[in-house]
Amino acid sequence: MKPNAQRPVANEAGACEHCGALVYGDSVHCTQCGKFPVKLHLCPRCNSIASKDESTCWKCKRTFEPGGDYM
View (cartoon, rainbow, N blue to C red):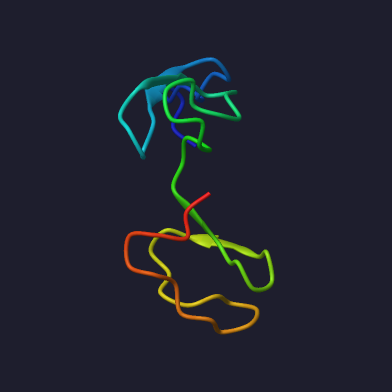
């Protein structure tokens, strides 16, 4: 670890990946759109969570809808 590197703070501000609104690091829901502020796929078949970069569910192998199935 770099000696001068700062660790992220829980209430450090950022942007919601869905709508771009200001959210804090400890936010569970965006105040603008109501979604989880980080884009993650939620599989409607088995309820597993996967990265936004994944194209299929790791558990049941269901293909994610393009631009959809986000939390």
